[in-house]
Structures are given as structure tokens and as C-alpha cells.
Length: 201
Ligand SMILES: NC(=O)c1ccc[n+]([C@@H]2O[C@H](COP(=O)([O-])OP(=O)(O)OC[C@H]3O[C@@H](n4cnc5c(N)ncnc54)[C@H](OP(=O)(O)O)[C@@H]3O)[C@@H](O)[C@H]2O)c1
Image (cartoon, rainbow, N blue to C red; front, side, top):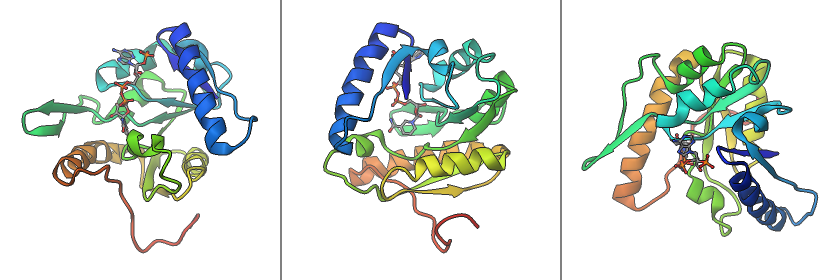
């Protein structure tokens, strides 16, 4: 796994720290995370996850658009604004962050996932199983299948197919509701979908 950054030395520093944590969680020295500049991190990857603030979304994808061709681009970016009332969904000209990604990197398979999983929860060493589903959206069945499987590598998580890319806007916007829940209940809320069998339909 390669961790990207705007700064290669910062990427390497954080990658070393992630390697140390991952080895402790996995109880194995087989895990190895390396660091590179964003554009270099894309080269050689089959699956690329873009996880930057909304304000940096377009520029980050545009600079790697050529290298993203033929790869799965997982977009977890939520276009949100924040004011004294909390988080709110920002209007996006293309319809959603994911639709913007698909326009900027037309030869990538864009998949929406991980929008609602709290980084605080994932980093908490006391949480052995994460009580949440990951909604996975995209227009390519092989790509959404792979990202569902990726999500299910997190203990407790189900990857749940939730529609085509054109439905991404409301999934991204729903994060504002989760942030409101978090503020009211002092939580790191996630989602569970009821009445579906585990695994592929
Ligand atoms: N945090 C969560 O729990 C969570 C959960 C689900 C989805 N998300 C989504 O994931 C995205 C990232 O969230 P986050 O909390 O990880 O944000 P973050 O910590 O503010 O940013 C993540 C990384 O993006 C890079 N970055 C920051 N500003 C940038 C800029 N102007 N241009 C290019 N790169 C920049 C930085 O890496 P370098 O400085 O090393 O380049 C930073 O470490 C957001 O869109 C959010 O909606 C977050």
C-alpha cells in the first residue's frame, strides 16, 4: 500500500507510522506501507482512494488524471460547508464529488465508498469490530464488487451496493446529518442497512 501526500517526505513519515500501527493491529510484520507524492502513489496501484478536503478534490484528481486511467478511483470526499449551525451540503456543479471525479478522470472506474466511516473510529485501538456498513456506489459491477470486498476487510463492516454513480450526491450530503448526530449525541455515528442478506445478491 502506498500513502500519498503533496510532500514526499511527509508521506514517508506518515507511512512509517501507519506501518507501525498496522503491524501492531495485525500482529504481523508482513504489512508494509510506503509513502510518495500523490501523482507517484497512483502509479502501480490498482485501487486509488482520494481522501482530501473538498476544496482540494478537483486539483488533486486533475493532476493524476492520466495515471488514473484503467484504475479504480474510490472517492470518499464529502462536499460540505461548516458554519455556526454545523455541517451542510455544498452545491456541486457536476452533481456530486464523484461525478466531478468521473469528469476529471474519465478513464478511471469511479466508485463512491467510505463516506460515512469515522476516521476516529478506525483509529481507535479499543474498537475490534466496526459497527457500520459502507455504502458502495458505481457504474461498474466488477469495480463495486472489489470495493465492497475491500470494505469488508475491516472487521464488522459490510460493503453494501447502493446504486449507480448518479446517486452519489445524497450519499455525500448525508454525512452532514451524521455530523449533526455526532454533535448531539457526542458519537461517531455510522450507518447500518437492514433486511439484506450478507454478501452478494
Ligand atoms: N475524517 C473522517 O472521519 C472522514 C470520514 C469519511 C470521509 N471523509 C472525507 O475524507 C476527506 C478527507 O478527510 P480528512 O478528515 O482526512 O481531511 P484532512 O485530514 O483535512 O485532509 C486529508 C489530507 O488531505 C491533504 N490535503 C489537505 N489540504 C489539501 C489541499 N489544499 N490540497 C491538497 N491536499 C490537501 C493533506 O495531506 P498532505 O498535506 O500530506 O498532502 C491531508 O492530510 C474529506 O473530503 C472528508 O469529507 C472523512
